[in-house]
Image (tube, rainbow over the protein chains, first blue to last red):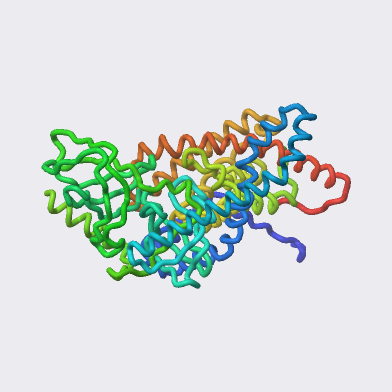
Length: 299
Length: 178
């Protein structure tokens, strides 16, 4: 046998697949079992440090995408008329847009400041830099992170009401799980009857108020506010109002569809509650405990 | 690589571009909460043009990057994409050559299978999901949207692949894909 003759070893593709699947399953198991300070969560936070500037770039890039349809409309106008008018109005339009932008931003920031004063909340203002990068989670990314004291579990609000809770933080950005996500749950009560329940999100993006007994009178338009139970969200923050009520005779509780107070899609700035008179203590498991308590109560 | 195989330069370009597009553009072109999975499209695209082992590894790595860039459980999409890459790359490559219909059909099926598998994984690991609702509101529209993105990306990639292959043939580029 020649000395330089090499025997090539071909690895079966099936074996490669099995190994990669096992690695994936191991990663998933670690992810589910480890806490929010576990190694994989830390790696993701580090990854967030890299992706945050890209997401910010995305927010910048998306502006021309949104106005693309307007540009297409303009292209169909008569060239002479369009040239003349556009030349005359270009500067004025740009100035008007800038002024309107400043006015709207000023208005939004004033609302956020008012909100902070009304609730006596310690908070940090942040800008939304990105929305969900996949279909399975309803999230937003904000441009403030642990460098400014933000931590996992802190509630996030818009000028109108609660929108979610911080799920992961990196140094300069944070990811917020919205209340409309199906894995969110907020302890709430109906303002009129003071009946307590849990508001949960859903796949279709609707909010449901659950665990309200059949004996409680619920009317469309009734306000729903946070109860403060569990210590995750401070008490008294508006969340929405009753849109409709559904129940069958066999049900033990009513299913209430909630119209959210805030449509996240229209907001660009938010407030992260870092503390309040009621001492917000991030406790992601508390809602689940409350849910169990209410289930037992119903039973 | 034979048939519609990718020239060596395209693989890193496609993978990096897919990740960047997913992070920068995808969140802003969501329709009704359905975000296109550009990384999945890229994985299928690469798998159609690659050997089984390299395609499976690329699928796994891109899935892992997707997991880290999004909010799902780490390891979920890497598992899904490794399986998809393996499945798609196991087809005979010549059935995809210059056959747009076949490429889109395979992408649609792969995207739906991927979304479905992801849904199943969520249920297995205990995420409270309404399976049927997720299937109808996310998996199916997601697969359709991914196919639409694929329809836009396929010709662009094919153009670059052809150009790159011509340069290769002319001796300007050297190297092998796998």
